[in-house]
Length: 107
Length: 120
Image (cartoon, rainbow over all chains, first blue to last red; front, side, top):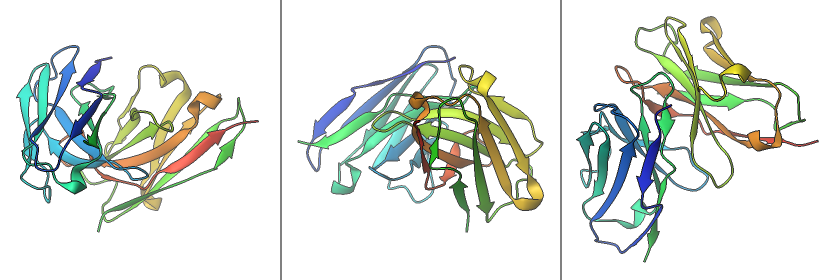
């Protein structure tokens, strides 16, 4: 299976900060990568697909970049609603895998 | 309006077989490009993808759990079913079903999830 590794595991930030989360794949996934946001007790929400395409309805402060094995999710100006856990997922292979998650906490 | 809803037992005993049902609305399981995945999340832990079924009934499974999983669909009932054999306490988790985003193999709409506890 393709292993997905996110860093950092936890990130402390303040409202208004620019935040970047990294996701690395153990082998190339081309651009077949998605990012999700999950809040406690809720199902994940799709933010980004195909590495950099913004899902409909998602604020433009979220952006994704990268290809191959290294990807980033950036939140340009952190809002109170953005404190959550973020996951990447590769979907190039039939056995799709998620990263271990990055929790964005209030500093 | 697209919705997915998981149903099944809240509690199962070790060694038993778990059967979960995902009932969908707002789209058809037979439409080209449609598909449904099952994903689980142990309490306080990360998401784990389990299985997927496409509109043409093609299936894919997690490599590590493949021997224990079966996914199938009943298009007439708008349902996707997942079975997992030989349940163990480590399988305690919230189980989600989610719809494949059209044209992409990642989920866009998710169910609310159902918590399954494995305990004797």
